[in-house]
View 1 (tube, protein in one colour):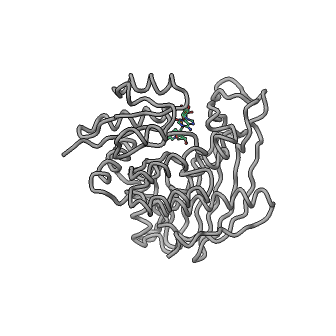
View 2: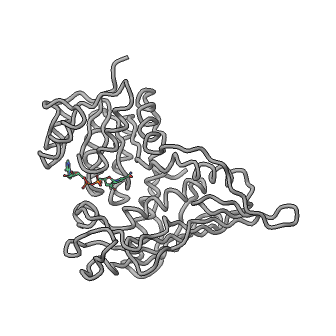
View 3: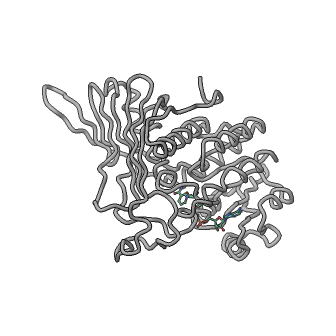
Length: 354
Ligand SMILES: NC(=O)c1ccc[n+]([C@@H]2O[C@H](COP(=O)([O-])OP(=O)(O)OC[C@H]3O[C@@H](n4cnc5c(N)ncnc54)[C@H](O)[C@@H]3O)[C@@H](O)[C@H]2O)c1
């Protein structure tokens, strides 16, 4: 069988992770890379054995002149939708980095392009291969926790962890701050475990509380440039779902506290903490805490391997893109509610309903 020909769009930090795992697979060939910064594209090509005629500063030129089976889109959040759509239009499968896009509208356009082309659109949530999350999902599905009525979604927050690259903090590139960067994981992790309940309304606040303060760039924290900071560094949201489930989302890039606490789920017959995974139930007339012996998995290897396998099969995507479009509409509603200072509806498009 001919090798799978892969191109990379955006040759920054995470693109190297993609290239590393693609290169592990014998029937994958890295053939092209595009980055607006020519030097970055060139040195990336050198590092990963991409031939000189596969180096581009314009991804459209790359898509038009190189025969490709698949691309990884590794550009800043607000530059995910266009390259993904252009690739899909040309019949090329797409693995796009998280967050799917910088808005629900963009994500929907991407979904439509994928449907029109019949090609794979996979959002690269490597966390979908986390043994803890997969076990938690199984436990919820088994009914052992009863009716789930409450969940807290978070990665726990960072005390001083604002990303240094403009990719994440300049509005034009990022589209938003901590919510889009790591809030998207907190939401996807919990939605995956809960079996993708349908969101109804959101009441939320966002804050740029620390990011602009030069004196907050203290020793021991991640270095960033407070003068470039244009987005939010804190988010809290109260999200209502069909069936009486409520989720609180909280995330922070910077705060005066060590942690926002763990993600957890409460059900009528049991509860669980997601990381590290622990299950709380009543058994034999006692309150029990259960931990599981879980396998060690390289989740980044799994995401590339599963994408490539799906490409070989011709689809479907290992992660249903409609699930992530719903999550992007939750994110839109969070920003809208924070702006308006009141609860708003999550307006889901017909393409993701039913
Ligand atoms: N899954 C993960 O664990 C993970 C980790 C880090 C980043 N990410 C995601 O990956 C994306 C990139 O993050 P990063 O840390 O690699 O950022 P980065 O700033 O290191 O790299 C982004 C690259 O995109 C290039 N670029 C910008 N506009 C472009 C365009 N129009 N065409 C071609 N190239 C363009 C930039 O020049 C830069 O080299 C972000 O969306 C981020 O959320 C995911």
